[in-house]
Amino acid sequence: MTKSLFRRNISKKDVFLIIGGGPASFQCAETLRQEGFIGRIVMVTNEDVSPYDRTKLTKLSTIKIENIVLRNEDYYKRAQIETLYKTTCFKIDFESKIAYFDDCSNLYYDKLFLGTGSRPRKYDEILDGLENVFYIRTYKNSNDVVLLAKDKNIVLIGSSFIVVEMAGVLLKIAKSVKIISRSEVPFAKSLGKQFGTAIKKFLISKNIEFIFITEKLDFTIENRNLTKIKSNNLDFPVDLCVIGIGSLPNSEFLKDTEIKLKNSFVEVDENFQTSVNDVYAGGDLVVFPNKELFGDQLKNIAHWQVAQSHGNLKEKKYSS
Image (cartoon, rainbow, N blue to C red; front, side):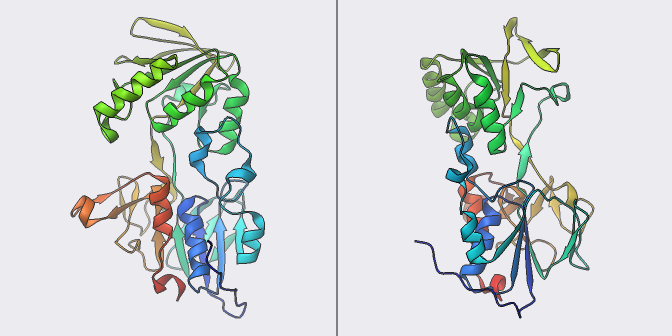
């Protein structure tokens, strides 16, 4: 059951700015209202809809956005959480506490939460901009793939959860489904070779071809479409290609700033405070401490529920 929400007091001028539209950002906004923050909350997202469950993008054949949003628009109105859609932050002046956006606007904040998440890792520049090559990041990406996949030869590159789950969805409508991987079995590093072997056998039993490669892939491109892939003496046609080979943090706008980065990830402490006062961060963007799991190291865990937990901070420092 959703907790009750505190009402905004317009006489209280404090602004809590949240940059990003993922699970950590949503949870931060909701937690603020639940825990007593009565100032202004502004959440900025580069998408055209409010935060939604991205884990569903590779599990459902057709995505209806109203079925996967974390909260509907009525909730945001009731919670008095302002949302700026199709807006990207490209610069932050941490000394002046001003964020600058690509629509030429800017906003002063008192406290800031960074939850810009990650983006798909690209495979090869030669594939950029092709009409039948997709990376799954948004609900539109997923719907476009399903729309084009009927009776097509589908090739998926990688062995991530996105690839394996998407293969299962596409198998129901495609002519053929192949997975090309540089790992002998999927999930070997994260879940172990034994589990990965079982998953591979399951995929094969469902007529999904799993191809292990060690050589570089060669691509044939015609009229802005990928038409053929060659490798390891294999040569097969491609009607549609989906790539899932990991992700990179969306932290470019934080480089050469006061925010401390580690391998492009934002470093935070146990309270998800960054190296800058009044600036917090969470989700796929960060490396964070956990003595029990990591010892003295900072780690990144790209996981939906982990990201939500980063925004679910009930300490009064958020709501004071």
